[in-house]
Length: 470
Image (cartoon, rainbow, N blue to C red; front, side):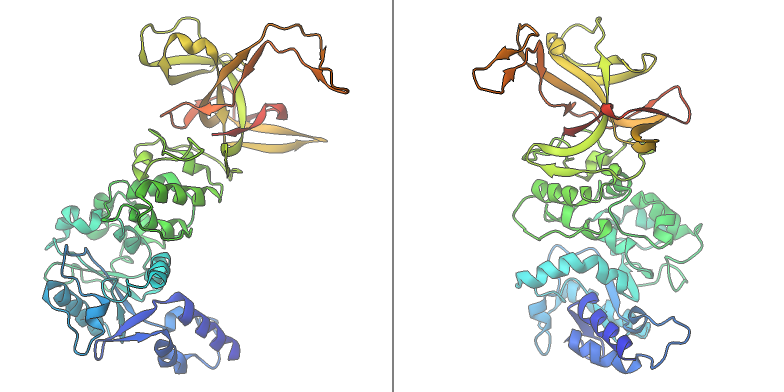
C-alpha cells in the first residue's frame, strides 16, 4: 500500500497539469488539492495488477482554436466572481458543462489554467503539454467552424500547430460542433471502427493515416520524415511554436525561449531529434537552415513534404560539432562524365559509380566549367557493420539510400613523390599532387535511393567507411 501511495503522489505532482478547474464552483485548485481528493481511492490491494494512477485521477481537457481576442485569462478567472466575459468565457463554460455531463470533477483549458506571467510555469506547461493531454481521461474538441462531419475538412482546428498533438496524444476524444452538439453517438471518437466517417474525414483533413489516430500513438524521435509532413501545412501565431508544438510528438525537451526566432527554435528541435540517431530525420530536401555549422538541418517541417519513402535501416551515429553534423557514411566515389550540358544554371548530370560501373546516379548540380575542381561521391547511410571472422566488413543493401556529396580541390602542387627533409628532426614532408577539402552535401539534394544489381546484399571493405561533417 505504501508503495502504491508513493507512486500515486509522484504521478499527481509531476504528470498532471499544475492547476485544474474544480467544476463544482469553477475555482482553480492545485496539485496538492487533487492529490488529497483522489488519495482515498488508491486501492489497499491490487490482486489483478490493473491499478494505475492515471486511471484514478480523472480530468477533462479542452482542445480548440483560440479566438483572435477575448479568451479568458488566468488573472480574470482567479477573481471571485470571475472577471472574464465574452465569447471566450462562454466557450469555457460550455466546455465545463459538457465535462460535468461526463461526470468529471475537474477540467483544464490552456486559455486560463496557465499563469503566463510566470516564465517558469509557462516553460513547464509547454514542455509538459503532450503529457497532460495524454494523461487526460477525455479530450473535448470544439470545432467552431463545423456543423457536420464533412465540415471538418475546412475547419481551422485541423490546420493549427498545437492541435496536432492534441489529436494524437489523448486516448479518448469527443468532437463537438460549433453549437456544442456531439458529432457522433460514440463515447470515444478515437476508438470507433477504423472505417467510420469521422476517421476518414480526419485522415483526409490532416494527412495522418487513420491507424495513427485510431490506435495508440507512440511519441518518439522516429519516422521523423512522415511525422514532420503532418505538421508541414499547419500554422502557429508565434513562429517558435512550430518547434515547441512538436516536442511532445518526438519526445524531446527544449528550453522555451520566445524571441529566439522560428529558425533557431527549429534547428534546436532537429538537433535534439538527431541525438536518437533515426536516419529518417535526414530525409528532406530543399534549402538548408541557416545553421552555424551544418548544412544538414532542414528549414522547417515543409522541407519534409513529398520526400521519397525510403527503407533507411537502424540507428546512425550523429553528432553535431563545430564542423557540422558528424556521421560515418560509406563513400562510393563517382565518375564525372566527360560530356556535360553546356551553359550555366542547374543541370541534371548522370554519374556512374567507380566501384560498380553499371550503377547510374542522377544528381542536380550547378552546371559550370568548375566541375573538374570537384570530386563526387555517393554517401550511403543505411549500411551495417558485420564480423567476418577476425575482421569487420560493411554490409550494403541492394536498395541503398544516401547523399550525393562533393569535395572541392583546394590546392594543386607539382611535387616529386620523394620525401623532403623539413629541417626539423624526425619530420618529413610528403609530396602531394592534389588536395581536396571535406565532403559536403550537394545543396538542395535530398536522400537518393540506388538499386545495386545484387540481391539482397553485398559486402565491401571497411576502408570505404568515412566520417563526414555535413
